[in-house]
Image (cartoon, rainbow, N blue to C red; front, top):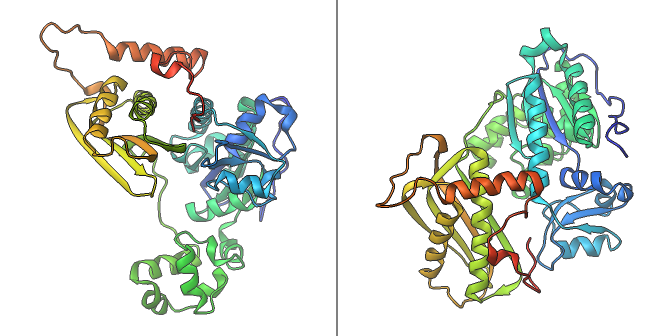
Length: 412
């Protein structure tokens, strides 16, 4: 299906009155899978799963055809294959998803600066200030869907409501490829028939506690005195859920929340005790984290490694550098030292990770040169690698040790 052909379907709406409903929640439909299917249209209509195919891989995304079999994100791949043995498995292409995500967020910001990304494939928007220029919220939502489909060849679902909480529920309710308006005077009618698990903050444990009170739906919860909820669940949780049950959510759309850290981790297909192979993985992760730092305009001072043993015991080690950095060579050297000092050399590991914290704007970082050191060097070389990756693909330029084939190794 071409991008031009991929037009959003008609609105599926609880109501049509969007007065007092300036909040949108926009959520891409099966994002990673949808991006992959742009290049493989022959797979449309089939159950498709995106994720590492190894025995320890997890599902990153699944088409709705695969979801009908019970497959969902974060499910172990081995279970997904069991549920849907005929599914087509596509290994993830991380660079592609970041590129499309950036493009989609740029579309959102052409409608309003009040955009709060909460993941690579979803965001809240406050379009109250765009009414005079672009029309009512539902019309803006329809334009957003059309732009995303036309420019990126994927679909999204949009909830329109008077609060973030209700807008997110509405976008989930109209998936895939829909638009739902929850009028301000119909919020309670929309919420009360929903299962209690629909409320933010209700996990399995809270759901069990509420079941003991005879609570199965949001309406059941709304009829419980807040004092009872506070006694059973704690004051904060009880108060929070009581407010949500009546559609009260005072949180505003926050245009930007600074990143606190940037990291990446990998689970090996089989446990690994070879230090050289672990070094290569630390290098791969350092390259990925450094590229994400530069992309976000950050540099960081604290580098940490995460090491998970075969028995799931996990340790972390960190080191704070003299100067913030976004250079993979520096991150790798630090991560390698931390691994070497961890006492786990030769110990079988199932997962390794690299993370950078204490982030600052990279533009404000000044570097103290050593005696005889050139002003240009690794940072400039890695910036050139970024440009090559944007033009020719994520693996266009790699360190030599990552180019050679590693038979039996799966890069998740």
